[in-house]
Amino acid sequence: MTPKLFTRRAALGLAASAVAVTAVACSSDNGSSGTPSTSGSGSASTPTVPVKLQLQWVAQAQFAGYYAAIDQGYYTAEGLDVTIVEGGADIVPQDVLSTGDVDYAISWVPKVLGSIEKGAKITNVAQIFERSGTTQISFKTKNITSPDQFAGKNIGSWGFGNEWELFAGMQKDGVEVSAVKLVKQAFDMNGFLAGDIDAAQAMTYNEYAQVLETTNPDTGKLYTADELNVINWNDVGTAMLQDAIWANSEKLSDAAYAEQTTKFIKASIKGWIYARDNPDKAAEIVTAAGSQLGVSHQLWQTNEVNKLIWPSTSGIGSISDTAWKQTVDIAMGTKNETGATIITKAPPETAKNTTYLDAALKQLRDEGVDVDGKSFAPLTVELQEGGA
Image (cartoon, rainbow, N blue to C red):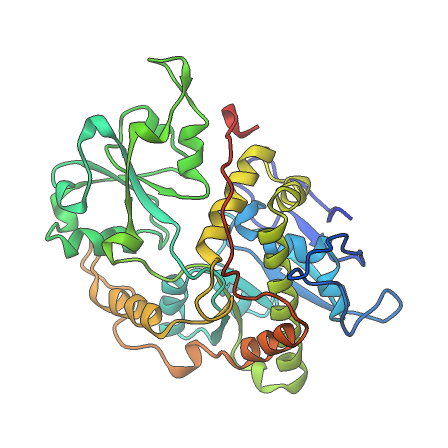
C-alpha cells in the first residue's frame, strides 16, 4: 500500500515539514528467504502507539527504508503508527527531537555532536549509513583530482554542517580554507554546470546523478561519468558518519520508550532490507510519497544509498568504534573559515548507545533475517534526462 500524503510542498528543498506519511497495515509480497515478513507484536486490530520520525530533508530515497517500513507494514507489525515528517533547508532535525516535537530523528553525526555540546540530550541508537556519501566533483578539464589542487580554485560548499569532510580533506592535504575561494553552493548543481564552481559538493545518491541527468550542450547527450573527476572522502580518509537514528536520551530511561526504540529500530531495519532486496519497488514507494524527482532518479538514489549501508560489517545500524573516533577527531580538530571547530571536547558517553540496536539485531537474526547483506550486489542504473 502506498503511504498516504497529507500535504504537498511547493518545491524541492523549500518547505519544512510539509509532508507527513502515516503507517497503515500492509502485507509483504516478497518471498525471498533473507527478506523480513510483517510478523510482529502488532496487528490491524491492535491499537498502535503514535510515533513521529523527523527527516533531515524532503522525501527521497535517502530515506527509502523508512518509507518502505511504512508501506510494507513493518512498523504496524511492531505496534507503531509512524508518521514521517519531512525536513528542509531551515529544519534542524536534532532540535526538533530535543524540543519533544518528534520521537526520533535522522541526522548526520557531526551536526548532532555540535548540538549535544550545546546541551541537546539526544543519543545515536542506530548508525544506518556505514559509509559517507559526500564527494567533491569537477569536470576533467579542470584537472582537479585531489584536495591539494584546491588552492586558488572556486570550491563549492553547501554549509549548514555539510562542509566538514571537505574542510578536513583540504587541511589534511595542507590547504587552508583561506587558500580557496569558497562559493556558497545552492542545493542543486546549477552553479557547477554554469562553470561558476570548479569543484562542487555532490552526494553520490543525489547531486552527482543530477549532473548525469543533464544534457551536455557540446555533445547534445547526457553528461557521462567519464567527463568527471570525483574525490570521495572515504578514500581520502576524512569521511564522517552520516545518517543515524537519534533518540531522546532522557526518555530512554523510561521502559516504555526504550522498548519502543527497539521496535522502531527493528522495523526500520526491515525497511532498509526491503530497499536492498527490492530497489525498484522502494524507488516507486518514495516517488509515490511525494518526491519531486522521478523514478529513475529515485532508483539511482536507492542503489547508491544501499552501497552506503551494504554489505554491513557488523550488522546494519552498528556503530564502528573506528569510524566514530574518526568523526569525533575531525569534529574537534578541523577548522572552518572562521577558525571554529564543530566541538571543543569529546562528546559524552550518552552520545551513542547500541543497547536497543543490539536487541533488534538479535531478534532479526533469530527470525532468520539477513542483517549483514554480505552478498549485496549493486544495480547498474540508467538515468533519464531530468531524473524522469
